[in-house]
Amino acid sequence: MNDSIRFDRVNRFIHTLEQVQALGIDVAEARENHLVLRLPYSEKIIGNPDSRIIHGGAITTLMDTASGSVIICALEDFELCPTLDLRVDYMRPAEPDEAVLARAETYRVTRNIIFTRCEAYQESHGQTIANCVATFMRIGREATPKAYRELITGGVE
Amino acid sequence: MTSAETLRYTQETGDFSRLLADIPYAGTIGLLCDRFGDDLIFRLPRKKENLGNPILPAIHGGVIGGFMELSAAIYLMMSQESLRMPRIVDFSLDYLRAGLDRETYAECRLTRQGNRVANVMVTAWQKSRSQPIATARAHFLMED
Image (cartoon, one colour):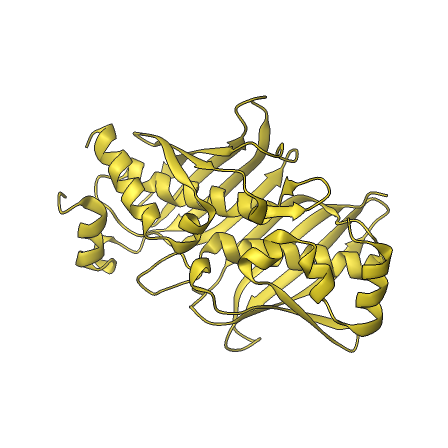
């Protein structure tokens, strides 16, 4: 598998997630065991209209998606892995009017469980907005319907 | 952020519509809140845009997280009679069951209130309160 296949798989995968499309999240970088997603700034994810700061919930969605999707960049075969748990530490509020990026990797892959970590940051200042660790359960390739697997892999497995 | 008038109105009437109208993210996911006596029940009606996994289909885990996180903040704001949205420090979420494409509910409990930091537990369910789809805990920093 090469990086362009990884990019395409993640891109196709996140396009099947309604909420991810609603927030306008897209793929910035995909390499082996490395994924960067971008959440654009928009009025609808503001938590506080006075400060215009993004609500933590949108950051959680970004990081959950990046952590779940980096698995596509870490495994040869596509398999859906449900999230078991997620912990987010908020370091500082995101600056308004600027996209938030989330960089994710897996740090341990076992037969049953995948451990991931993810950092949300902004390009202009490079500082961390939030850190996230998550665990995912492997339910196996066969638990994902073939038609959906083919949709994500483009029929090339 | 919330005006004193909106807070007073919400506390007097139990009508959260004005308070929620001030929070764009609440409208984006469709969060609602009802008061029963002193208890608050948060609601997330079915919404196509909130879905993640298209096969089940299931609500995006991030939306469940955002719903519980915002519920905890509003709950804390109401219990503190604070005009400011408390600042979240950390958030830890266990997904227990798939959040299916149906209405979701959440309730909060103040586990500990210190001078500067509060700990809130959140439980979310769909079919039955005895079968939660997720539990979470969060720390908030209280500012004045």
